[in-house]
Image (cartoon, rainbow, N blue to C red):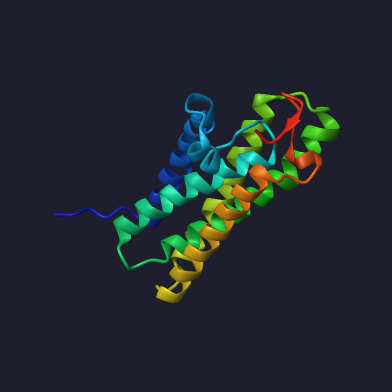
Length: 176
């Protein structure tokens, strides 16, 4: 007998898993530095490169939820929108705090608080999107969003605008 968890429990588990995957994904390029890992994992400590952590973690959750729910929920779509929300929240909240309040000094507690807040808000959005009626067209849109998000991250890994969002203040460099 398959026991189905309710959606709220799934979203709580998803939020925790996203955070744990993010912690793992943060170090993949450092552990295995090569062209392939540079495409999908952050190559430096810039704010922008950390979007790869977000998109990767949310994509894994989308796939797990798709397997769990099969074609009963818009999991890919909801998690693609969730990833965008999380990314925007991190950039909008963290960037000014990091640049102007912390003066580019890293503070892990503030970083984690902002990231956890962004994950929670994005998973609340995912919860409400998953309550909507299943629509295969939305799933195709979700796949497209993930592909675009991944391609943008890859392009900006190798061709960064010379903006503070793309600068690694720890190593004083752009890109790899």
